[in-house]
Amino acid sequence: MSLLELDGVKVHFPIKKGVLVDRTVGHVYAVDGVSLKVEAGETYGLVGESGCGKTTLGRSVLRLVDITEGSVVLDGTDLAKLPGEEMRRFRRRLQMVFQDPLGSLNPRQNIESILSEGMIAHGIGKDQEERREKIKAILDKVGLPSNALARYPHEFSGGQRQRIGIARALVLEPDVIICDEPVSALDVSVQAQVINLLEELQKELGLTYLVIAHDLAVVRHISDTIGVMYLGSLVEEAPSDALYAEPKHPYTKALMSAVPVPDPEVEDKRERILLTGDLPSPANPPSGCRFHTRCPWAQAERCATERPQLRDIGGGHRVACHYAEDIASGKLSLTKGEVVSATREGVEDNPEPDDPETGTSAEDTPAKIPAQAEKTAKDEKPAEASEEPEKAV
Ligand SMILES: Nc1ncnc2c1ncn2[C@@H]1O[C@H](COP(=O)(O)OP(=O)(O)OP(=O)(O)O)[C@@H](O)[C@H]1O
Ligand code: SF4
Ligand SMILES: [Mg+2]
Image 1 (cartoon, rainbow, N blue to C red):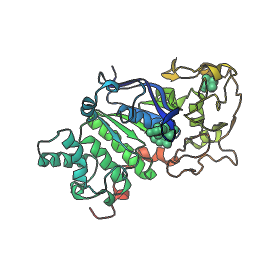
Image 2 (cartoon, rainbow, N blue to C red):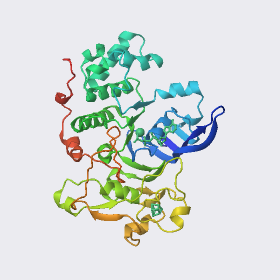
Image 3 (cartoon, helix red, strand yellow):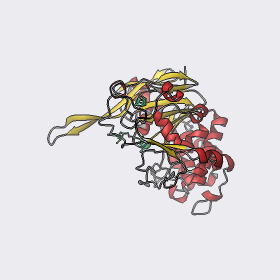
């Protein structure tokens, strides 16, 4: 059995209306039947467009949102069925690292106080002296000086604050850490340092990660398995190398086709699949295959009426597409959309994001991959030079 197993997880948020009495007039199908397994000591990367339900899925594992249906089994225990008090105890074993390190750290508490809080709540350390020693050791592991203890979050750079967020999770000795967009608020060079740190900590402490990101480059190096989400469901899942070598689902193909390749010869030949249509609302998802309104290979009737299940098509891929084999063999040709040379004049491969907060653009293909990230993630050492706090340490 895997350390963490999700089976048919659904999270539907009711849409309420009414002046005096709230009426439920519909639902946001944020997560709509996700099953996945995270093996101990490994990393599962979850990618997908903004609004596809990644954060909601992460929060459902911690029961921070109500699970409408399905099970979340950690080490043999179904968390979805646990009463509140027992769930509180289990929560120590599941920790979350958030996208916005500053927003998730109380500005009025110093680092010792922030890191002690969870330890006290879970009865870790017999007194503050013992807790302080443990916090110092963890700060050292995440590359922060022990005199950080008395300082406040605003005195640190973005990368350092994310290290504090990671330390806050680590002091509780969790089994699984859910990292929700752990580096998307950071500069590209600092992103690589934080990803490297997560990898080093995993090796040293045997941690298990669920890493959520909208950026394929972020999850590529760190993940053993990658799951691609579209409108609340997984559309493809494969070992990281297999997914990047040969994506099978039309949506994954479109995402991957937007990723620039460092090799200039390959890059010159790269073709980009341009999708048509906007991302539908999760409150009113399309019938049948949820991707059929934008899928370049969509077939009449079946795609619009029958919802494809995630099925094993070999080579380590699980794909939710009726026609995955025919698309891979070239038997089916495009019915809509366009395949263009990625380097053709006028095609912008890395458009500026429309929404600077989420980094997402209105373009149909959401993978805005910083070209340098791949290089820096491997080449850069976790030097602190670019992460000096505003005040001297
Ligand atoms: N508490 C809530 N009540 C109602 N709708 C919600 C709630 N939380 C999330 N949603 C909706 O559920 C959908 C999925 O949201 P979620 O935040 O999980 O997406 P995401 O994939 O994490 O997006 P992003 O990449 O922008 O972080 C969105 O349409 C969102 O508006
Ligand atoms: S099932 Fe049909 S619409 Fe859905 S991804 Fe496959 S070909 Fe496209
Ligand atoms: Mg999110």
